[in-house]
Length: 249
Image (cartoon, rainbow, N blue to C red; front, side):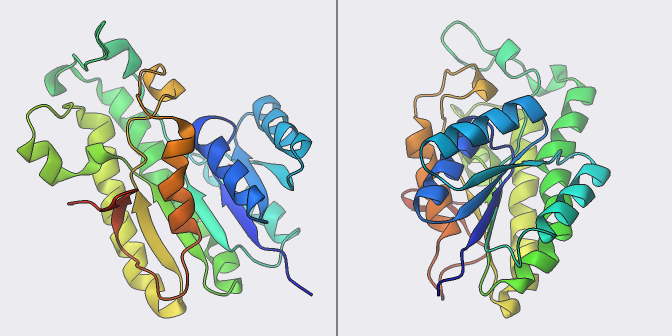
């Protein structure tokens, strides 16, 4: 008898997270669709079940210790372990408002709002730490679990320093740089336990995050996320990848 594999995707009621949940479910995973909004999360899970997939909504606000603890308890009561964790939830407050008519980013770092940056870090940086730490016992209960941090090309310091055309988005970009460092830190700790931890850069994808101005589809974006979530034994860990391979830090 084959034991069903379990996957949790945070921020999965729309965009890249929803497509990742769909793709993992199509591969035979039972997917726990993490979302903080009950109405949207339940509706997204129901829609995927309507496509024939085994998906359930899991109430999860990655910025709340209490919510994450409750979600961990709820999942532990339903699943013996967690085979895949995709830390996808992310925000970019003020980003859309700073886009020009041609889609270029027009807010210099000196004008970014500190409150927006703090909110960004709470979700994009502390959220993945909070979730990974909380669900680690369930990851360890699985055999060779996979953790994927959904990063961004904007997290690459080498790219930002060497490309004057790269959008200079201080708050969001630096949050993804920090997430890359967190990826390496967890990877170093968890490698001896057979858990891989990698960062995925989906590319500039049309989502609510950027007012759907991105040029890539969610189907294209989910490709590298799912690939890292389903690595074979002996696959890379502590890396930063897009669909074409490793990216410069």
